[in-house]
Image (cartoon, rainbow, N blue to C red; front, top):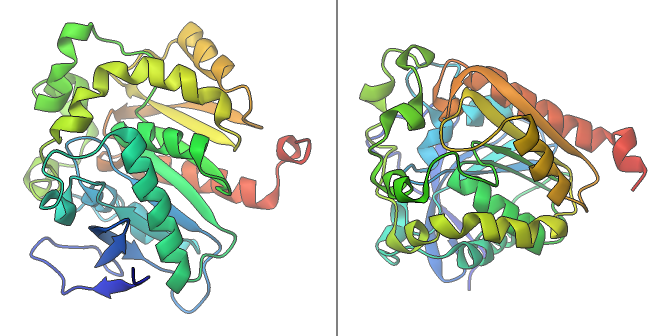
Length: 300
């Protein structure tokens, strides 16, 4: 297989300045991605951004306000940011109308990093920044793939805050309150600009939603990199009280550092709300600390 990235013309969906759409061939799939790179210098590292269920990579390049885009902010701060349409979304939906399981998606994500590194400068290596269902994929990948630098996840825990009978509503996107929280948390144009970002959740990943607590318990001890978890103030899908967080972090026994934070004035979709810039800056600051070598990390 060729290790290449094919640059495509900008599609009808508006992209932020400096962001371009590319196609990455990996694991036998054609994956659509959004890419932003530092101008005039090599990247400090690469941030792989992994979207949640029912969204696409455009989640990380929100158009309702200039401050929303992780891609433009990351590039300005010296990181290459690659936001990948997960298998079953974007271009690969043609090949995978039913999607893939988390384990299968993890194999693809590892191939994405390998293929990208074959043709692009990657600096110190790869960070994963993921949201919601993408956080599940990032945690699975962190437990399976060597060499990752650190992981930042928002909107994903280990125990749901809803009854099992309500979980199908995640796939249907029918629980607006849990998914978004108060509408005042988002710029006025949010729900006019996200049409190209929303996509159906593929059946195979939707079928795995109910299995996540067991999957997490199995994989958690195998995560051996620094982890930062963020829960929005108005997070409605996950349990994130003090006892819940204690139980979650207690399972990440091999991670050299586990940090849990709560993002004020934010709903589940943090990166599309007014809190996006604050969250993205905190996530990138965490990555900077990992590059610098926190004392906690030196004691590994």
